[in-house]
Figure 1 (cartoon, rainbow, N blue to C red):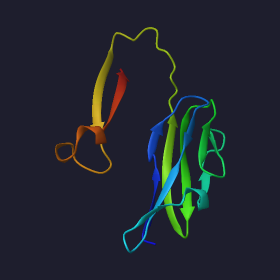
Figure 2 (spheres, rainbow, N blue to C red):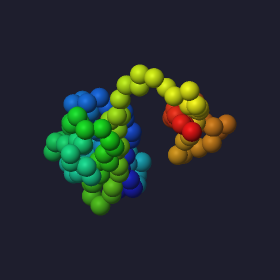
Figure 3 (cartoon, rainbow, N blue to C red):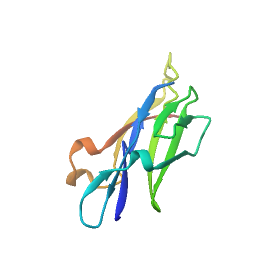
Length: 126
């Protein structure tokens, strides 16, 4: 076996939401096989999310990020689930500056399709 991949790799979730993970193994001869049922799943933050034996991620109500480590025949992959804080903001301070940042872990903006980028909003207060 050459590698494994877990899908989705990243996902923003809702409080008490669920996401079924899927694990695909790529073998040295090129064929790909679903190995979800034979994989082991382990979250790094059990107070943020729980993962069932067959890869169903259940988010709790605590905001934060959880990395789910997936193992199959000595190979490892990671899926990251995020639960944003989501606190409402009633009034912005007068000296607030908002900026938008694009970033990607895998490629430069000019070389990739826009869908591969994550847009973040940051609020700076002086």
